[in-house]
Length: 160
Image (cartoon, rainbow, N blue to C red; front, side, top):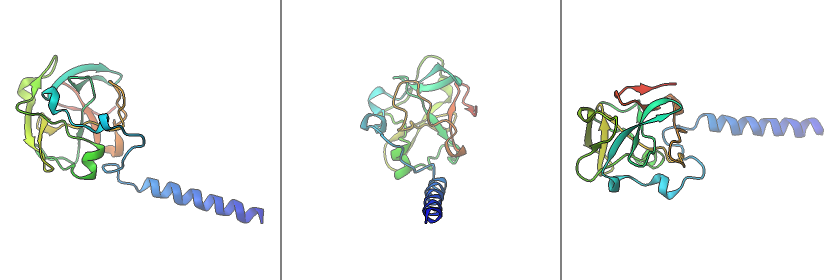
C-alpha cells in the first residue's frame, strides 16, 4: 500500500514538472505580477538610457527598469502579441523615443506594435519589459526560454 502511495506521488510530481517544462516561455505569465509592472511606458516619453548592472552596462527606461529584446522578432517587427505582450509589455511611446545617458540616438527608433501603440526599437530590435521585474534594476527575464535578453548600449544582446 505504501509503495502505491509513493508511486502515485512520484507520478503526480512527474506530470506536474512535465507540464511546466512544456510551457511556452513567451506566453507564460509569471507569478505575482503587478499592474505597475504590466503597464506600458508611454508617459515617460520612451526614454532609453544605459545603466550599470550585474550583467554589465544595459539599456533601461527612464525609471531604470530593464528592457529586453526577443530573439524571435524580425528587424523592426514585433512578434510578441496577445498573452505574450501581457508578460512582456512593449516599451511604448507617445511621439518620438528619446536617447538618455549612454544610449545611441542613431540606434533609437519606433514601430507600430501589432496590438496597437508605438513600440520603441533599438538597433531595429523592439524593446520590452518583463512583468516579473518588480524593482528597478531587476533582470529576472534574462535568458528566459533562450529567447529573451537584455541589450547593451551598442545594440547587441547580452547573453550572460
